[in-house]
Image (cartoon, rainbow, N blue to C red; front, side, top):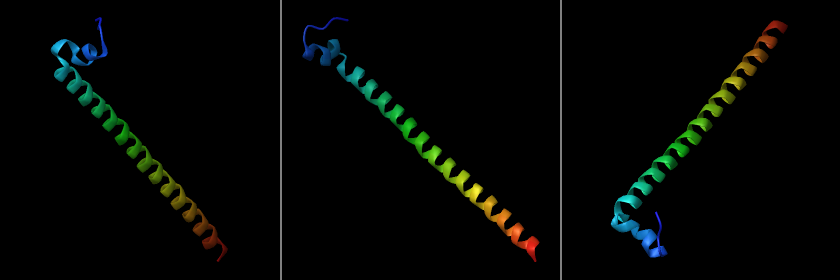
Length: 68
């Protein structure tokens, strides 16, 4: 599609409301997906760190138990 001016581009041939609303909804959905993925990644990494620390403490306790 060819536009003669920037105003014509933003007007989108009379369909600006539908075009820009669709664009905004899509951008918001993609942003929501990105944010939730980052949050989920951080939660998963935190759980993995906690599990590793717990296993380390268990091994250390077993070593101490064997010395008695």
